[in-house]
Amino acid sequence: GPGGGAPLENANPLIYRRSGERPVTAREEDDELHDSIDDREIFDILPGGEGRAGLRAAGPGPLARRRRAGRAVELRSAFLNVAHLIRSINDPEHPLTLEELNVVEQVRVKVNDAESTVAVEFTPTIPHCSMATLIGLSIKVKLIRSLPERFKLDVHITPGTHASEHAVNKQLADKERVAAALENSHLLEVVNQCLSARS
Image (cartoon, rainbow, N blue to C red):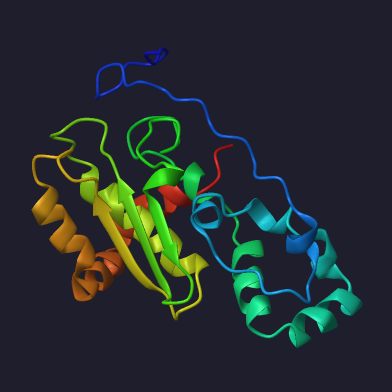
């Protein structure tokens, strides 16, 4: 239903229920088996190394086994060491997550592990949202910080949901502009606030 509490700039955004955590399977627990990256894993990167084998990473035995597992180690460790959930990125103007505002949804995350591509569509809460570029930048930075470098990232607005989607998508696709934006200390601070855990 509509949000309550302190007045918000986007009047009464709908708040959506968070999806549950994905159950861990025996296959995912096995360090000897290849563990490919999928859309749920991008959407639901586990916090602080807890969950999917996170507790096992402390001991030397499992670590040695994980080194032998080769590429699966690269993938699994990239996710297990991430401090925050993609779905829990904070909205820049609401005290809510992007998932709670339905800005990001698992169905709008496409992963091709074999081709090393990740595409994320996000949906601003209103068609003239002035925060769309900042939201997209936050998602992109989260992916850059979380994934192995081999991945090509595509973060863009869900088609037809924003008045300036072409301009925002062009900015987000331009590596030089993204790099320049992250050299701006004020903007980087705002992005880091979006990516930080809520207290």
